[in-house]
Image 1 (cartoon, each protein chain N blue to C red):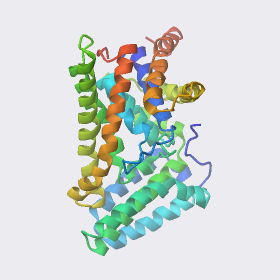
Image 2: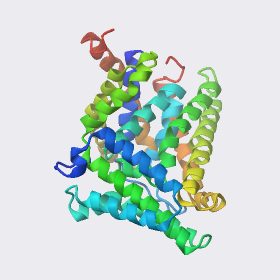
Image 3: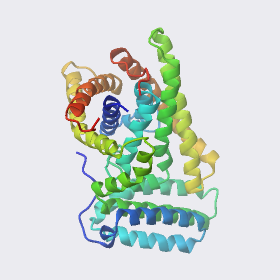
Length: 201
Length: 187
């Protein structure tokens, strides 16, 4: 149900470290926003598109992943034509398309565990301050992945219960029971975690 | 943070993921379809309170960032955050915090049912609509160059749906408050 957007492969982006990719993403977004030149944005978009198409996604899947964001960008570009010159609109649109494409390429070439390792390192300063524990973040992430299928099954059960009684399936009558039933498990799950000493307290 | 709060935060983030899997509803009198997931901000604030609610959404944001397709419609990854509506998704964390802060201060167990409804509705509208748009709209404007006033005018199309969401979230949050109260801040 929750399949990561990562794609197996051995392209240039696959071989780069997560840190290098994230720094490149941040640097290019700052750089492109500082530059008002249409040519720079166009070159950036071509490079980003070439990188994105080289990661091994099928053209259909590649388009599907960025399609929705592109639609929003095109819609706002159409609105912008009433206020700005065509060159300005082209600059703004290409810049966003370049960044979105590059970001999609980073997502497609980075595994969840690689991201988590990097996040653990980024959280170290906060851990030293005693604000949080990096292990807790991983634990919480694991819990989400573990419980989404359960909660979805529960949603389907409540929906079936509505149908069996001839009730219309409305968000209002589903969300309440879904949340109460789910959160009531918290005590049992917390006790299970503490009993096994996962958090070393 | 105790383990129970950690589990509550994770479970709520998981609930928000599941809300994204529920098909959106279209109503005749509202121009945009209503996704159950966007109600998550109001629900998390009103049910878990400021701190735990905001942390649940921070965790959800992390899921998006590391490339899980958890946003409604199976979207996710850094591309969504880099797009024009990235500000709304990042704004969810602050919006949930404000919703929770208001709910914690206005809703008491001793109050009459009606007062609790008003408290939750006020929190949902101020946090989940006002604060969210205050972050999301300037972001859209800054990223795309569209004048802020135009963005604001365009966003008016979403307001009726948002008010309806606030109403549904109010009723659901009050049902949870009666059945399994968590809001009294223990975090």
